[in-house]
Amino acid sequence: MKNEMDFAFYLSMFNALLQSKNNLSTRFDYDSCHDGTVQLFFKKSEDETCCAWDLELQPEDPHYKYDPDTTILLKDKYPLLNVYDEQVFHHIIFTVNSVTTVPEINQYNRINAFMKMYCFFQLSNMKINEKDASEFIKYRRFLFQYFLISHPVNEESLNAFAISDSGKIIHTASNVALKDYASDYYDFYIENYEKLSAEIAIDKDEIEAARCLHLSLIDMIENGGFPLKIPSPDVSIDMKLVNDSSYFIKAYLENKQIIIRDVVNLLNQGNFHSEYCLNFILQNFVIYILSKDFGEIYQFLNSFSELEQKRAIVNLLFKNAIFIKAIMDEKLIVWDNIKDIICLFDDEANRMYRLSLSD
Image (cartoon, rainbow, N blue to C red):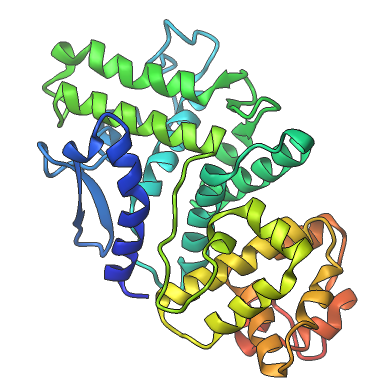
């Protein structure tokens, strides 16, 4: 996967956000880094990124100190939080901001990189279904959990936050909303800028821009309905199957052949853009169809006439994300239950799931 293609893909998605929120495109610009990533830099303080400008300001990890300072940054607003709570808040603020980073993909991070962007995309696009609010929250909780897992965050941070019934990201131990804490976090540096300016690498107005961007990203995760769109590949397909989960579900239930047709068309391509669209469609199938009825995997595969098509699809379903294994675990489905599917695994899939040929 070429980084210039990743860059074009990310830019097409985030351009709408940067243009719509206080014209943030005048404050930030993407640029390449020595580590192979492409990151969102401040235009004025051009050596600083929206992800890392504050890292040197944060206290040391209390887990690595014998006698850590027990005073937290926002002690006046959150007197019940401790230094360990503060640490996980800092972790999740960084995690949310890092969605703007274009990673350099390699064999070790490709699954996490895809899953993180897929989860963020689904969360930010998903529109609430008034007829089934409980199903809506269930999807959002699953996607948010795997957004964190695929960053990846440590176990402490993963367990510290959840989506509430109202759709807000909350710190479970204190019930403090992430958006409230993050807003106060950025405000602290704005309000104390004159006192701390020697330690802060960006201007006061840039902190305000970073605050606006961060709160916008939280809004996208919590509320959905933001029209991020993956652009069309060269092959002609129905992009609403990629970009609109509600449309995908409706199409699967009412006219599955549209999906089958486009999967076949995308299988015959082979470039990054087409592969990404194909992976989105297949993981839509996993998240929105198999999570309800895992048996649909047989109906889906039987819709393809060629064995090689079935083999390719099975390997894509299992190798490009681990959502399907999470759903199997939730439904107590073991490998022995789907031997007629895992017999289509290639060597890489067998290694990934530690299956032997005898399994």
